[in-house]
Image 1 (tube, rainbow, N blue to C red):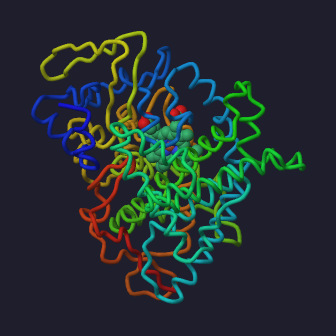
Image 2: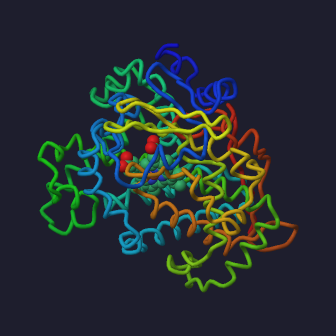
Image 3: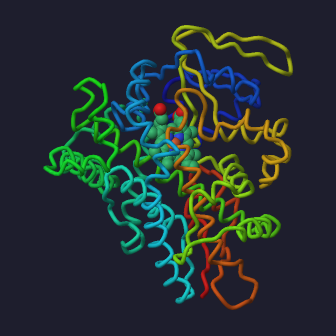
Length: 466
Ligand code: HEM
């Protein structure tokens, strides 16, 4: 077994890992330096919420292409410092303060979908949601966006280039120079060496320029509307406030908040429109809302809908937007694991790399009955299941954008389903799933941090009617 193992299997590594577990049991060394656990009962041990330091291995930097970002910070204490500079920006209170940005962008999305429905278009809905999520998170962080919702094909070229950067993640560990070239080389070199990701690099340059512009703006209010106020006014050392690191942090947040959220939205919409009982129960719940004239409900109202929240949770369970292994190192104390079937105990020594994966964990039939079935009710009937849910990870390195993500997905689905009904031959604004198969277009065929459908898939397609 060598480090090349992962590069060799690439986006199919998750299937190889599953195969290894089927052969050797719930705890397996999957690369020379990484132990993987496939057992929901281990979540608390592997990702404790309190009282233990959690590091990450240094090679994650090379894998993700966001050097120096909070996500790939190696040491626990430095991670805490960096994270506390950005986390207030994503607290529930901050999300509410910035609700107008959500509503503005949802208004744009509705106007564009209105044109599609008048034309009777079939829409690859993932691109619409990516444009929405991208404009939202970019505006949220920078007080300006790249306006993908206004772009032809919803900025598809940019989005596809971002996906191509994700395709490099599995080789980043063994060929770190590839990601280093991407992160540090001038644009023209990227154009020559990595032409497929050049469009993505242009986006990164846009973010870098926005950082410089915000930092040097003569308008003192300018920075206040951005994530950089917290970063620049924090107690972080000056070395953490360089343009390069700030751009890396910005890239992390946009990357983390874009495809993940869009993936969740389009998977949820697919299941709502293909499960009549779910659709009907959701519509009944939505009927209690009182949206304003623009057709968009308030965050306060949306947050009080338990069934919609359960739909979001169930979607992230089956279709985790971040599908990669959640990789950690416990620097000081061992991780103790007990195999529930054999009773055998294991101790993963301090300093060792270990991980779990959300897809394996959530598809475990002993903990989630009929795991492949889309059943939002399971979260309402049995709230203790949350103990085994790692869709946003757990512990000190969990998703910093969880409050934004849950609300963003919920308000988008609510807005769409308030306006559009499921098509069954009637007049009026409707939606219908078109030529989409879960096994081909939604289930994971590849894992490149995010899940990807089968080659050649057009994703989830929706036919809109007016
Ligand atoms: C449904 C959408 C989302 C899902 C499923 C998701 C999931 C995750 C997961 C599983 C992790 C941990 C990854 C790991 O341990 O390897 C993570 C980290 C992170 N997420 Fe999210 N995320 C979502 C949306 C967002 C949004 C909207 C933001 C915007 C701010 C965001 C920002 C981050 C950041 C900055 C990290 C790194 C945190 C750290 O290392 O301290 N995510 N996310």
